Image (cartoon, rainbow, N blue to C red; front, side):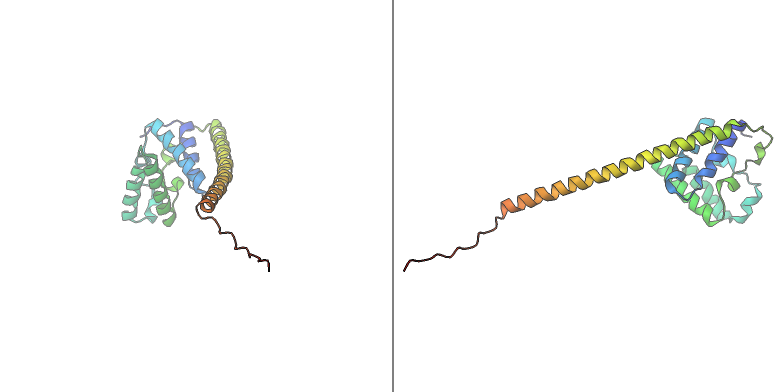
Length: 179
């Protein structure tokens, strides 16, 4: 049995619930937060998936084995591989009508007393993540404007270089003769 405090369990459960979100960026951020907490607690998804979980009856045996392998990859030290595995697991769970709350068996820890601090800590983390997302979105807008300025400057420079290399011939002037 995994030795989790009520605070750790509630926090992990809340974060994993947030990771099953329609917004992919928020979902990935929540997953990475859950992954760090699981690493800190030295637990894996496999340790939280109970074979006796009745909710797992809806998923075929092949899909369950595949999901376990994908979730094992989600604990990779390579962040890109980990996020890709998480997204694959999320799609597979969606296809089978599951989410982390129904997949992972937290009922074994139901006897642990719940702490009021759980919601506060998770809420603070959510606010922090939302601020970070807003800051990154503002930075993206700023970088996009800067990129447009660079593109315009580049186009002007190319146009000037073209004009220098290929001067426009002056129109021939008519010569008038005195009679």
